Length: 149
Image (cartoon, rainbow, N blue to C red):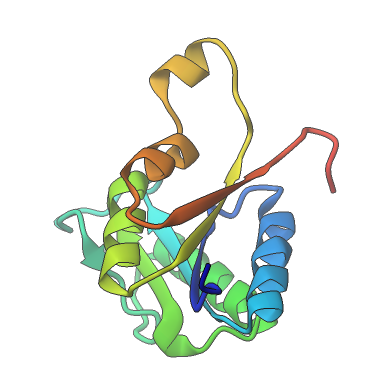
């Protein structure tokens, strides 16, 4: 088995994002791999913006919600020592954008958090489940428990 060379951290800024990010960084260090990061905007309105649009992180906008999201991604990326050319913020559907970027960037492993939902939420699907089924590479779903810090 070949070692992972490119690891993509899919982050959603949830309360557990720091835990997932640290697991991804640890894996990247263990395998001496390049760590990439993606945040898919699907929870804020983006007027006149087509799905799949990459949001430039170095351009300022007058949209406060977008600037807040960009600043969070930049801060996390800086803490993880992820180079600017390996950072993406994309407007769209998370499962689709994560798997497309992974294929484009020749990602070997996608790291994503999963709450392990049950019942109706499980039937409706989740980002982790969608990525697992559609990715062309390995996917590591970090199980998030309500009591983790």
